[in-house]
Image 1 (tube, rainbow, N blue to C red):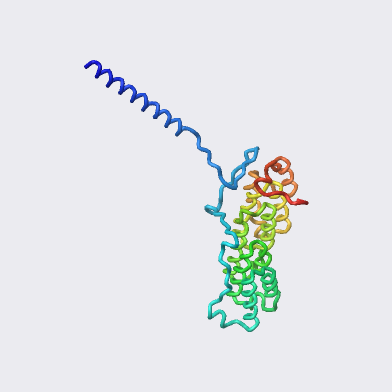
Image 2 (cartoon, one colour):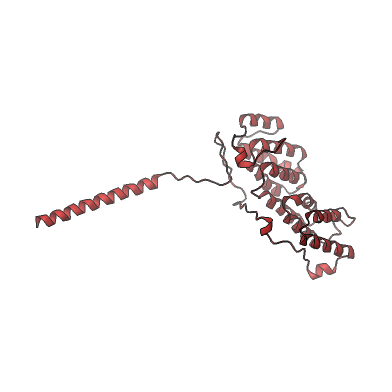
Amino acid sequence: MNYILGVIVLGCLCGLSIRAFMSKSGQEEQEKPIVVKTPGVKVAAKERKIPVVRNGARIRAQSARSEREKPSFALDDDDESNLTEAQRRLIVEIREALDREDKATVLNLVQKMQSSDEWPDGIPKAIKLAAIDALSWFGSSGLPEIAGFLADGDDEVVQTALDKFEEALSDFDLSDFERAEILIQAAKIVTDADAMDSMLFELNNMRHSVAVDTIKEMMVSGSEATKSVLPDNIEFYTGEEGIDSPEKLDEWLVENPDDEDDDDFYGQRKEGQ
């Protein structure tokens, strides 16, 4: 009897020991700090601030061209019935060039349309929207022609062109130098302050030297809409108030130089950059 009681007591003690060990182990696991790595966000040695994403969650997903559906440049029957003979020939030529994936011809035909006497008001909106869609299929190389639609009198045409600029900027394969070129180009012609404010978030995806050069260029060549939202974006990027001149930007850059591993993060420098 005593033997049986001893076995039972020993079993209980072992069970309590195991439970206490598991409880302690679980507590240590819960207390262990969790490190979350955010893709695309780089923290420098000087504790570079991680910018808070504005305008809601930002989705950066640019499909490869081969995975996106090729534009058909199709128009509704009503739209096509109202075209002039010259406009019909134009869209046929663009459709054929798209079928051949002939980027040079598509760009040339859109440039021809934008330099015609009918531009912009004499060109139907349906053609403009189809042209923007066709240009965007070729990626950022079509942005100079897409920029020509940003001064259109139709809000839908302008917004569609702006959307394509933002899509181009969302391409992860762009280096910060390429991103800067797109941003500077848009900054010269965008007249919508809110749209430009959204695009300027891309400063946070550039190494410091590139961002500073981009800001300095926009201070000179940016549209009034760009210049109106630039101060807040400079403060947002640098984390400091009162940086309102190229000289002050240069002073800030001396105190906040590029990191040694920036090439791994933002893309290799090209010769002359």
